[in-house]
Length: 257
Ligand code: NAD
Image 1: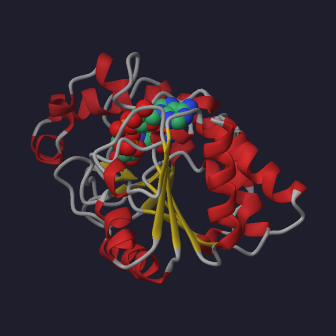
Image 2: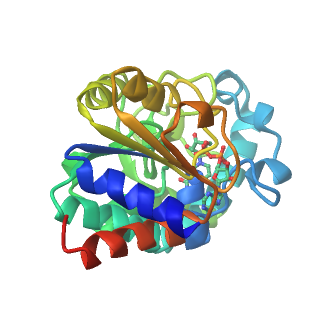
């Protein structure tokens, strides 16, 4: 493991524009379960219950969605960044970070101190809610209070429209401006680090593919194998927090960042 981490540190040292691509595995060490690992969210819920068209068409589906989403939000609300998030902030401090493109909705990159303009949340955020009819925005905690008081499915105060957290559900359109920006960064980076992601969720996984097609080196750090491992200059099957923390420590101790 040590020699792999040294190789990774050497690639980061050489790089000038690092695109970091993160998934749910980055936040498991902060106590937020991922979707696909044993004990993850899909062990407990059936993903097909949460398709966007069902959310739109079926009051019962909305009720189920809010139950799952609220339980998940409560684990996220007070979670704190772990060593991996801090290491990514340190990459920014070193002047190497082009951007963080994240599939996560937990705001931990913001809490770790990365600049907001460097964070692209392609699957949205769990911390706000919008009306799907008039677009009115609500703070998530306000909606939380309503749910705690017994409301099962919240609706818009202004127009009575359906409210939904600002996250992208299965079957819901991706935010086009954010995807375009993410693909631009994929073309501009010289190193892409895919961290804590199964790399099976599309179109998100096409971002590291686009980076590697555009000539960037790819480092994958993930506990399990991924379908993109063959493309990578380096694959590290290890804890994201420990691996990234060690890589940053190596860069610092060499004094050459
Ligand atoms: P995923 O659940 O498909 O895969 C997570 C991967 O992380 C797995 O391959 C697992 O081996 C790995 N992993 C888990 N803990 C790890 C650790 N400590 N160190 C290294 N690797 C670790 O997640 P995904 O690829 O992000 O895609 C699924 C979807 O899940 C995304 O759309 C995302 O929006 C959503 N999601 C987000 C959160 C969050 O915001 N924290 C949590 C769960 C799911």
